[in-house]
Length: 87
Image (cartoon, rainbow, N blue to C red; front, side, top):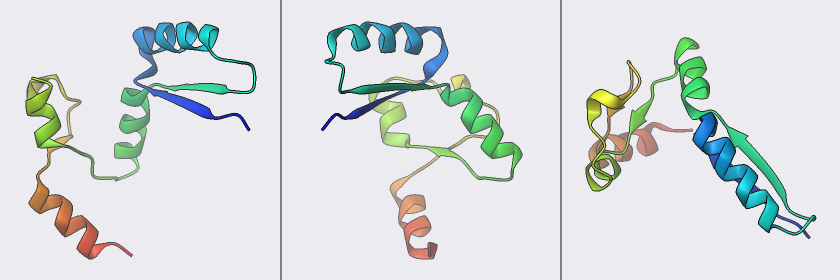
């Protein structure tokens, strides 16, 4: 049974990566690319709160100013609160 490979951040770089990866996969596997910036913007327009993992931001040396407006820098404490308050 084939697998579905999802490439997040589908902008130009993601589409190139998905195309190259597709060429190396056997036909039973499926590729999908998502423009993460567009998806997150649409979700925030619907009222969804979006936070980025603070540890990942630090480890990948991503400057918080590079994030989309409205995305907060999250923490383990915030994650624990989301899990506690989830359905």
